[in-house]
Length: 250
Image 1: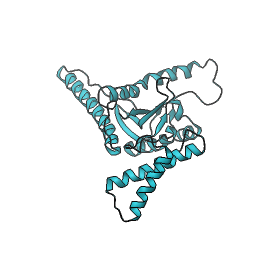
Image 2: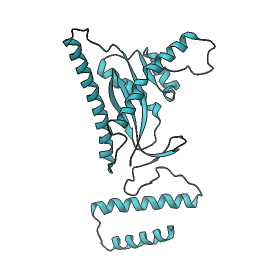
Image 3: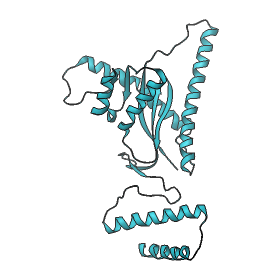
Image 4: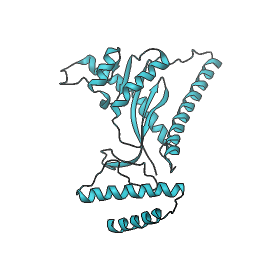
């Protein structure tokens, strides 16, 4: 099969050498064809099944196989994004079609939080993957408590740490619920766009719809409280949650 593809590539190169011109779309396809051939030839010659930045879709060459480790689908294809929840408002911190290390995003997220509020949060509720030494030291120097167990050997019968961890896990349910709402209610689980920019825009619009739903619910709650002369419900949380989600592009 690679021999036939190589032959066709040489034919096209011959026509191009004779002065043939490609349209803008054909030039994109031509570049993708050559990259796919080079990757497949590399894997064949080196007897391997993986290559860096492997193209798995001709019409969507930006898609990358991302290992998820799930029993149902160990490898998935789509956009990966990090979302934070700051006093109930979701923010899209980072999105990409490439597999990246989530822990590298935390420090830049904290800096943006400081730019918005002028201060650092009291605590950050995040997955264990964010608790590396670099992030822990950064948070410690700024008086931020990063949730989760300490590195190293676990302590014995530390009731206080257990209570704090249980409370952090309970509070972090909000961001997991936000991911569930994004996929189930606001279209993040039904993305069918074919272009890279429109796919990322669809994810951003899902986050926007989630925030509008939250603000509408808060407004109705405050209105209901004022009509019946009840004490308004105020959000007094001074922390934010941070996590990573994966959206499959269909």
